Length: 208
Image (cartoon, rainbow, N blue to C red; front, side, top):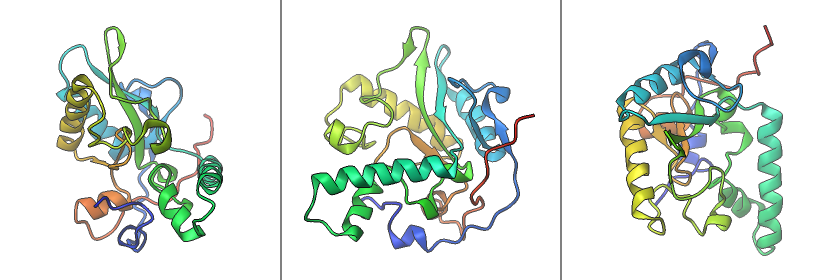
């Protein structure tokens, strides 16, 4: 059974901030559609993963560090959608359902600069990964889950390639979102059997 970010096995893990800076991913040669940041340790691992990819294919990071207010807006909006769809559920059940797609604020890896949402691109644009990034379980009929079976053979091959290079570089996947990979957060600590997370919430960098 999938362990979600709302699970107490995740929420009880302590975050011991190590003070590592955030870096702009484009300065490390990582393709992004605009300005995107992550912790230096995440960026270093993305560089390694990129080097593992076949010639002509690259990682494309859509989002890394996320402002706290943006995280809260996404979380609250999705919870409201779920309450409308499932009026019989209590708030604890809504929290569990919501965490399949967006993390509760207090454990969110994006606000720590520990997570990236990414895909693969080739010479002719994005590769087929089965769903758009940020497709909810409702929108995609569960195809957003990494191990979903209702995707094409090509999408499965591409997801496996993505997983091969990112796992080899030391990142972990959140299983309900094929595009979400992290290092240094609570989910990484749980998956990698680490004693604690090494990144806590991080403010958006001041413009230089």
